[in-house]
Image (cartoon, rainbow, N blue to C red; front, side, top):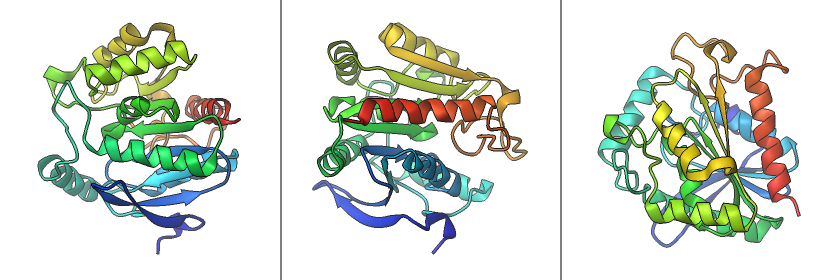
Length: 262
């Protein structure tokens, strides 16, 4: 087993429709960390460890890819082809609905809250799954959504879309106001996978209930294989604890802790 998974415990979660494996670490209120492409790679697991070290129980579902496997271009391309072209639980191009797998994530959030207590559950989606945390707001236990480099839907037609249904967006807006909640949205400002129009839509839909963090390319950890994109993982510059990406990571962890603790 990969050393990246040391300290995590594995279980399978079945919502009655799908069964997926989940890797868990820590104690305290629950946070669901939804990985990016190509899967539950070491960078995602390192971020999960950071959240757990701050006093929370982290649930890392494995939705595609091989848990613990390092990122490579070939691995990522293979997962993209399989995920976008074959698997029905994901919707990559639609502008007016979320992916069906979000139903499974909502069920996981309910179970996690039941087990861990606290005021509710935090959730962060990354890249392909970035918008999932917003769509999960129709589940009452979810109280702290974070959208990290939300990249769906793909294509020019969806550049201003949030990849959620009108019902999901309206539910989130209502809950933000009535329950005094908010969301965080993160990206590198040059990232072509996260268009300006998408962040403009977030601001228009949620006003002062959304805090956006838009980082400069120079803030990113050097990664010659890809342009700045993965805010909390591959481009998190751990060599500079006072740098912008580490401050962003700390903001996310503080957001989870403040919203979920009883």
